[in-house]
Image (cartoon, rainbow, N blue to C red):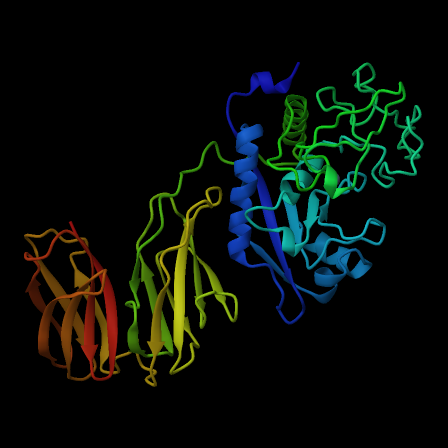
Length: 465
Ligand SMILES: [Zn+2]
């Protein structure tokens, strides 16, 4: 029985992405591209194999190791892969390149070695992005698919090949000789990729034939073959868009069901929330000046369905010069060690383990000053605002616990940075005290309450409902 008939829901397959850098932590693929890649993989499978989808299990893994980064095929490199792989998931290792000692066909974009039994694919860093087909292709191998040109992998058909081809492909075969598939389909179950709705293909490297193969290869009966240039398991690299055939999808489905039944692959949750649109940034305010640099608190809006956010900060708006990137499980993060007297750019992208389709926020910038005591007012022990959320007919209580007396302004900002309310020159004595303020003039929404003293600024977010 075809297992696909007994399944009526999407199966979510766990992926573990391993982002490899050299020993100094340099050269790693950008997390942004990993999110783009997952979205790319899911949208391809959603179109052609909609019951098979993928999600990130337990965030990303980082490996800082020279061998794993640039020579992953060596013993030292393989040891790193073996030590880092996780059980019951498909591991995706991302080194500098995917070349192997046995590769032999120039640059390898990625690979899955079906003979190793390993539950991993290796994809070179340059092929992890929102457009590359490499991961979709290698996952096809992992789920049991062969190339349509099976048997011609290491010896593509070219002008020197005997034509018409003989009964068997050039491969010495594993475990036996692989017959050449005929154009009339008569031996499709026992030849080539052993799949009947993929026509013969003898592996044709020639960019002239990307869209319509006219190389003239003839099958063992002397019939000119007509390969499927759009099949993602083929090597007609530039012929887009790619697709799977129905039989390929059925084979992959059988493989998924078997792996789950054999407990070699976990089945993910029944469903995932979809993530809303981009987030809105709150703090620091756009174009803010003299931001104290020792500890900068970044705040943005929660987005429906998001469980994490990618926060990126750089001195350049391209985010590729000296970027700092963080997976943040919440809507704010304090970052220390930011340079004084510099302009920084930042943006935030919401996602969850499955839905990584949401775009970046706008890019904002701010400039740091010389001061370093932002998040501390020395005299202040603790402070709180209550209730939060607050309704428009309640008054806001600001509670202060001070070690020493100090003076501060209380400023309330809307999220677009507009000062909407201010209490000036408020004196706070030593010990516990509170002041109240009326917010009835403000619209419902999110605001920032700032305690502004000569010694520093403290922010808290409040929701008016
Ligand atoms: Zn392949």
